[in-house]
Image (cartoon, rainbow, N blue to C red; front, side, top):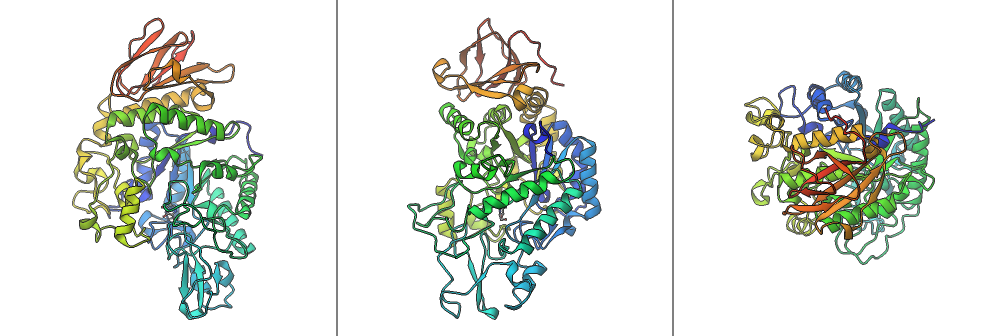
Length: 566
Ligand code: NOJ
């Protein structure tokens, strides 16, 4: 039975991209022993849950999102012993571990697919989605379906004269969830990792599991380009390939499996490429689906008071309690948030203050805490060097569409190595070794060691807000009430977070100044500054406080004392 006050509702998740985090064995690729070596760092920073991108056996054509064995560790990342130690060591420090599960597809090098494609009557044939073409001979695919990145999702297999379906890249064939053997196998995989101590799962493109059973064409849609949340494009909808009712039903089955395991305290967060309204359905009408859904509208939202307020309002409406929104500003696929904030560390601090004080579960992406930049790798010179094979259309067109959508052509740019120090290779791997991707040029200033020495750094700002959030029930579990815009200066967003009776402090007020100028805010009640994006707290008068440019501030409300942040 699930607990009444589950830990995942008030946690903060930190995403580790293992390939880029810390290289312990000196081959230029991050590994699990490297992560173990950094657990003290993560505990000191103050995050509570670690999500590790896939480290399973894989040909690494999509860096682990193409799995060839769900129960083995890729040798470049270590072995099962290292994985067991990582989970145990994380738990010893009170950190939770969330694993990444790619249920939708395997690698085309997975033994299941190798068998499946070997002949039409192989017992594994029906583990994948195979279909006759509209005409024999490979000229015409079975129907008009595009994959979620806008190219034809059907791939012809000459040997058996059939097409297989793939929602992502051609080397990632979709598993057939209409086959009960597939469902049973994947549920067993989930139990396997729970038995190993995994506290939860991040489910990759989980809204793509089932397709229309009759393989009907997708209908026309008035939509040329995809957006962050809606992959419909090229005037074609996704009704028959995404968000299928059978996928929603399967979410409930997943939930039962997870809730029934041991203490029932594991959780799942789904990557659902859909609008926030559609995504909410994955939580189940009765809250009996996935625990959390990634919400991606935040990725590109401008850091202006009206935009911030509108997004908070929208999530408060759509994900009203008992549902919870998530706050996601970056990941291993998307342009780094700081690149959308003009590279400004002050704006990044304010963004962190927002992310860590709003109602919902924050997901941090490794390197955000020190402001690692998007490493712009110029297309013309870098194409040969680009290692990410994510591409769908001819290069110039793909580039143009990405730029129009405010995204990067090249996911390498947001996956560069973590910057630990100002040593060569930023301390990610030994000097003299070539890291798998180059470190960003600003690593000499933007690194952990340097920022730890400066109380006014972005790193210390994250640490203060993480500590405040952890200690304060109003921040990690309280209700949120937006202050009316008419009571605040034009650049300021304000909200009160209020905990259930008994918590101390019972309520806090959060003020975010999304502007270049200092501004005075009238306080609605007696309040004491508690934590700021700046190291030094501002002076507060009897009923007003002066916010500095881009300052985020939490004040405790009422007569209660100020909790010590250390
Ligand atoms: C989403 C993952 O975040 C991305 O990195 C991956 O390439 C695709 N799903 C396919 O698994």
